[in-house]
Length: 120
Image 1 (cartoon, rainbow, N blue to C red):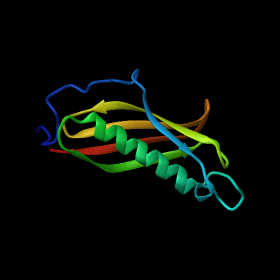
Image 2 (tube, helix red, strand yellow; image 1 turned 135 degrees about the vertical axis):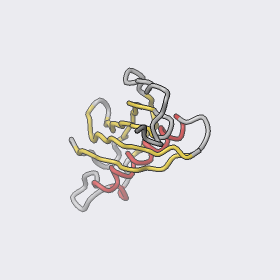
Image 3 (tube, rainbow, N blue to C red; image 1 turned 120 degrees about the vertical axis):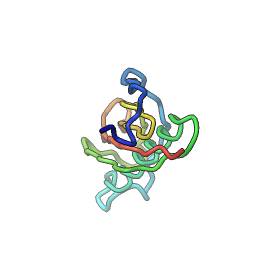
Image 4 (cartoon, rainbow, N blue to C red; image 1 turned 90 degrees about the vertical axis):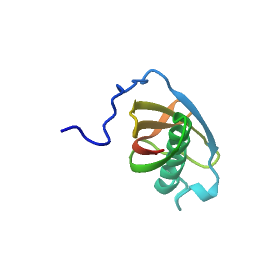
């Protein structure tokens, strides 16, 4: 029996297309007491980048996050510029699968993967 949310269109792989999603300069509100990037702030920067990528990836309708998973690789400090780069790894009729990486220069800070529902 076919699933009601299954798309008849094949998924469009776009792993080769990386989208620049903007920069954030770290200020004191992004830091822990010991002066490094707070995990909550890093997650928030990633979540905003994921939502921007998801919203820009659908022609009509809006998107809602279903799940976001973050892995912390390194940290950053006051004044560092954090850039976000994202990829749509799978796009069906009703669901988007995305990844976003946060960098300080070329140094990887965080990787995030997510699933977004497409509401039409």
